[in-house]
Image (cartoon, rainbow, N blue to C red):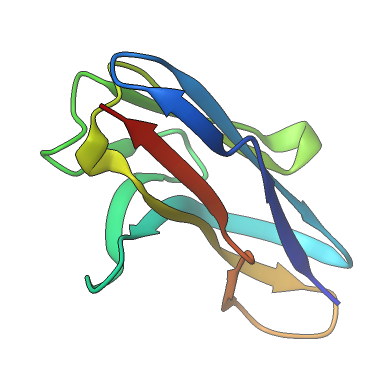
Length: 120
């Protein structure tokens, strides 16, 4: 069984930084893309950043030049380094990945989410 577990959320002042981590575990054969989404209260879940298996990446316009996504394939881990945080970055951040397991074809997995709160 494949699981995604996030860590690193918390409370930070505007202008500060946080680093989120997400580890994929279980009977993993291959991880395709890995991504971070976020969902603020009353809002739809939105894509924040995505990184492919080859390292190609993309960002939402709202976080470009402030956030950096990276991955460590040896550790099945994706990171999101968040800088110059703004109150509007406050949301639950979710890890997402498309993973081929030893039992199943490629499918999408989600983490449980980690809260990021930015105070003004």
